[in-house]
Length: 263
Ligand SMILES: Nc1ncnc2c1ncn2[C@@H]1O[C@H](COP(=O)(O)OP(=O)(O)OP(=O)(O)O)[C@@H](O)[C@H]1O
Image (cartoon, rainbow, N blue to C red; front, side, top):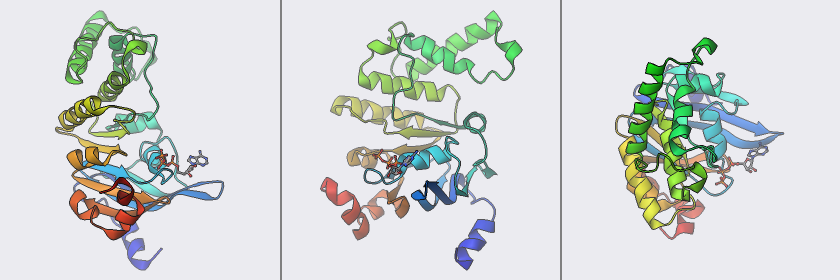
């Protein structure tokens, strides 16, 4: 670590940062999947993490959301160090995430998927048998969330019967049940056609109001439409970070990644 980075590591939280990684390292049996990643996600921004396959995007998401413990380095959420906390403790502090692989219960209805997620923060076992009034409130909340994610008319369908795009909408709805201040979305448009992609772009814009959104995304036109700033990862390290229009012109980025997409 250089003298400057030591000073930075010792400093307090960056003002305006919702989420901050400081010199994050994750090694799997000596292989560095995350290599000294430092980045600041500003409160209220939409920030895209991009990079070629295997660049370490999912590993970084897992570190930011507590699903992996870093080998070294720190994660701060609104100024509080969270890298030693469990995922549910981080959720309680305002960060939720969706997964690359579908996390919905296929044999349950769309509405029940949301209801189960809404009940999950209940902190004490004796509250498991929630009073009817609370269940009614949860029902209203579930209906509102389904409306917000465009599944207002799909309440009673089995999750298994949803299209791929609708499942992604439901996943975003499930992430919203915790009313997160920071939402991490792992490839929200993967496997979608142009219609589904347009729907997800509109949905991300809508859920980003009053929130910070970090997304891993392969589709560069989605990144261009949505992201205020982007971070490019390569071989586990940050290659470039900044406004989309600036970063896309960085020759190292063009060579490493954007060039592949023809941008
Ligand atoms: N649990 C693990 N054990 C060993 N190696 C791992 C593990 N998880 C990830 N890796 C390795 O770390 C590197 C980064 O993987 P990661 O999934 O984070 O990349 P990614 O950028 O998300 O890739 P993709 O775009 O294909 O999803 C890869 O070389 C991967 O094989």
